[in-house]
Image (cartoon, rainbow, N blue to C red; front, side, top):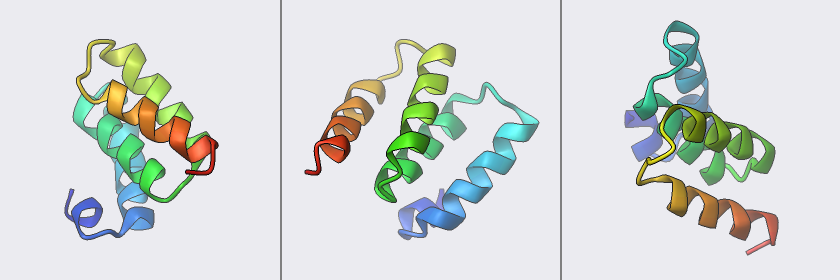
Length: 77
């Protein structure tokens, strides 16, 4: 979380991916990974993270915002 909050998206992504290796269904980690990949403008990575989050928690309150950010990213906004 610290790296994400500080804008260190590359480092945050690395830590979130490491955490997922230990617990692949952690909703907070999946949401953090989605946020980190979106912030670094990695559409493919964000798409995968959002899909994983949706699979684990289809009612996540973050999903609409993440989808909106991904749509904006893909459209170049």
